[in-house]
Structures are given as structure tokens and as C-alpha cells.
Image 1 (tube, rainbow, N blue to C red):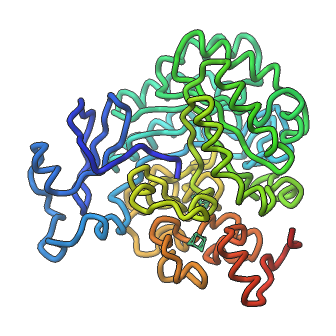
Image 2: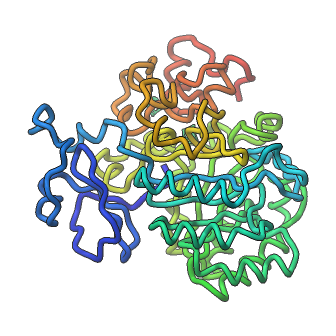
Length: 422
Ligand code: SF4
Ligand code: SF4
């Protein structure tokens, strides 16, 4: 998901860009910052002429039905600019090392990729690593993205020298949002990452917050840190941050080796939504949940119209978002295996019939209980990276979805095929 604030509501304030879609289009607003999905009638009222792909065959179809088609391009691209990082976190989703990956893309390769993404109508970039803040050309790439009409956002560990931090502070105005990775406060940080880097990450938060108000934190949630999330929210409030983004721990990179040890329990997943809503209300903070948390949201029977309005969508890989490895290899999302194209080849790949395999075939591939789940259109079967790791089949229902666990218990099917049941 990444909870984009798009809504089929008034789009009267300052459009930055408009992208045609089968259902109508997407308005990129500057203030408030939002991607607003509008149907054809609304697009016409905003002054946009009919598009060639508003064909007769779909005339009269409800906008929600048309939205089930793959978009004309991703909304957001997650670019892993380098796989270099000195931190050595035990659960690093990309297995970053001080040496980085072989054949990493350089500045000109990423600029060429940004050109291709801009032609495909991408609105936002999520720049990350490894640790992108150590790259001397990060500011140039961010400025280039701005010049092509894309908003660059950054995720950073904060774990680098004073000189590198000062340089990043100089680039800060280029970014729409900078999130520092803080998986726990004080000693809780080490429970997730395997070492205590909290003080250094906090120093980065303080320095960045002095130069921009668009600072937040990314927090990977594990079973060891779940009970301490209240401290993360209190910390964000104390530092006057804009948002907390919660990410489910994924079995990718080094994370696949410690997945069983760090993933949240079923009880924690079921308790997640009420707890997060309570913390958000108490601290009056904006919270975003990553796409893989959608089954933990639907578990609470959330109204589907509200979910659409808040853009709470499940597995968005290969459709609403794409990723790219440090080598430029294109992926459906940051945690998925590469496909057979580079990110700068996305224009040719996007419309190919088998593009992004199981990520696009979620409806045909859905097995029970996803097949009969009223949330399938929104959730799309849960996290494919977790399914692939646990059952060997990325198209299998998310084995950590509470509904899947309950269904399998009723039907005598083990909840996990490769790993022990907790
Ligand atoms: S596999 Fe799907 S749900 Fe999981 S992180 Fe990637 S896009 Fe999100
Ligand atoms: S049963 Fe499947 S579609 Fe329904 S919420 Fe769970 S993972 Fe998502």
C-alpha cells in the first residue's frame, strides 16, 4: 500500500500534473500533497478532454471496476541507488554490504532510468539503498528527478559521518519527504538491527528536522519491538516529525535468515490495527502502513469504501509501484526478485503480457480463502514475498493473514508449510 491519500473527492486545489487512466485519471496535487483518483466525469469537469483509451467498450462501467485494471504506469518507483552500507543490520532486506553489489548503476544510469519513469508517468521516487546518503551524486539525481517532474523522497539510516550528514542536510529541500529508519527507541533499536545505532540515527533526525519539516521515521516492526511501538510514536511526537511509517518485517535479503525469529506473531498481527489507531490518535501523528499489512487491516472488517478512500491497497507491486535493484534490475517491489528487464526498459516491459508474473495474476491465481474473500480486490491475496518464502509459491494466500490462518485451522490445513506454526 503505502497509504497514498488519494480519493475520489474534490480535486480543486493546485494540480501539479494529471495522468490519464481507463477509469478517468490521477491528479497530482501540490497542496495538500496527494494523488487523487478521479473518474471520467470528474476529469471532464476539471477541463481534461476525453482520452483515446476511454473506449466505448468500457463506457458506462463503474469507475471502481475500471480501477481493477493495471494502471498505465506505476505511481511510485523505489530505487535502490546502491547496495553499499556499513551498518550490517541482521535483517537487511537487501543484504547490503560495505562493498555493495557488482555492476551497480551510476549517476548517468539512474538519470536515464528517471527519464524512462517520467515518460511512463511516474509521480514519486522512493530513493534508498543500501545507504544512498553516502553517494556524492545523490543530490544531483534528486535535482534531476525534480526537473523531470517527479518528487524524490528518501529513506536513510542516519548512520554516517558528520560530513555526510551535513551534505544531506544541504540537499534536504530537494526531497518531498525524508524518513530516517528508526526501528525502536534506545535499546529497542538493537533488538531489531542487532546493534545499537539509535543515538546516531536520532542525531540525523534532529539535524534534518532543523532544515526541513518533511521528516518522518520508517519503523520495521518485529515481534521483539512490537510492544515498544508506543515509545516510537512518543519519540516521533517529541521530535515534531510528520509521519511514522510501519513496515512488516519481510523475508528478503538477510531478513530471510532471521525471519522466523523476528516476524511478528499472529496475536501481534491481530492486535496491530487497534493499537496503531490508538497511538496515532493519542499523539496526533500521520501513520502509513506498508502494503503487506492489508490483511491485518481487513481482519477488523474495515468498511471497503473507507479503505478505497484512504487508498489502503494490498500487494501493489508491478502495478501501483515498482522497484529497482542497485544493478538497475526491475522488480515488482523492493522485496521481490528481479524480472528480466532493467528499470530503464520499463516502457517496453510494462505492457508485455507476462509482465510481473504472479503480481499481476492475483485474481486468477487466488486460492481459498482469498478466492471468496470480500476484500480480495483490495488486498490481492496479501504479501507475495512472504508467501514465496513460506510456501514456495508467491501466488499462495498470505500465510500470516488472520483469515487464512483461521480458514486453514477449520479445514485441517497447516498454517505454514515450510516453517513451524506459532
Ligand atoms: S510483495 Fe506485495 S505486499 Fe509484499 S511488500 Fe511487495 S508489493 Fe507489498
Ligand atoms: S483472505 Fe486473502 S484476500 Fe482476504 S484478507 Fe486474507 S490474504 Fe487478503
